[in-house]
Amino acid sequence: MRWIESPDGSCRFCFLAKKRNGNAVYRNKCRRVLRPLFFGMVPAIEKPVWAMVIVNDPSTVMTPERLRESALKIFRKMEWKVPEGGLENAREG
Image (cartoon, rainbow, N blue to C red):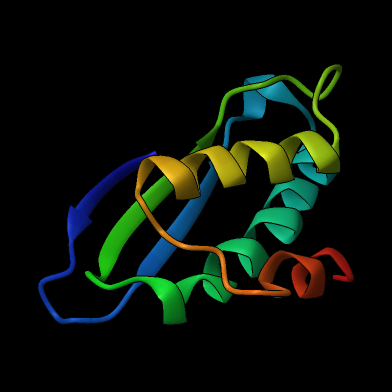
């Protein structure tokens, strides 16, 4: 993930899954899994950021659960506290 502090005070995320890692269905699925996880974290983020989340794993090894685990690692690294039930609600999507 690459990020900068938000110049306008709002969080913005873009999700990049490269074409070489899988077909359009795979890339869209990555975005569908990650989008609610990251936007669900916005209330818990003290310093808003603009971030580009990059999926590097190929479709042969990536699962939705693995994407969620990777997102949790990013949240810990950025020191964002996961709100209670935050990821549980996002898993339904």
